[in-house]
Amino acid sequence: MINLNLNNPKVDIKISKDLVDYNVAVAFMEKKVEQIILGHENELIWFLEHPPLYTKGTSAKESDLLNPNLFPVYEANRGGQYTYHGPGQRIIYVMLNLKNHAQDVRCFVQFLENWVISALQKIGIKAFIAPNRIGVWTNTKEGKEAKIAAIGIRLRKWVSYHGIAININPNLENFNAIVPCGIKDYGVTSVVSLGHDFSMQAIDEIMIDAFHDLRVNT
Image (cartoon, rainbow, N blue to C red; front, side, top):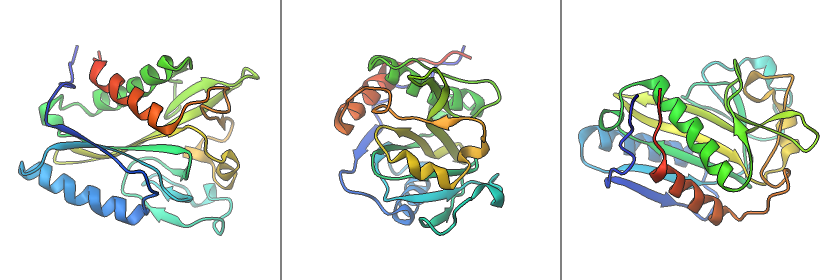
């Protein structure tokens, strides 16, 4: 059993109301991570939305970008493949020093997955981890498995950045221009598509509560 110190008072919360440019977000994270490594600033969880764009992770295949001209494509220095970001999708960038929690990458990824699952459960959505598939999954109204959240992180000297993307009410058609996370045989879904009407503010509050409540076992 590994306990993450989730009640660490040095973890700050930042919520951006306006859309944040992707390059601006990455520059902010990289600077923040360096300051956390040096011990100059607190750890941070950042809630935001991006304008429509695609990101290309370090494992992405060029053939999975089906329409390269639809939205800007950014090289992302995180693990994973292609994903879509845009309005209606809650991005949660997680800048935590794992030396303060648990120096176990697999444990940390499991924590992020369980954090999303726990929060979705609070709003009546049963989500789960699927064997050999990245991210967090659920069943649609038609009974088909679909992805509701993506996870992609990077570590620098045990400080994490990048993080989670949860589909609240994005335009799901925008996922059609890529093979999301390299998984061809399954679709994507969202909180609203599943019949749940929650504001972004409400989702943020639920995620923050779930963060403080959760303990992860490995």
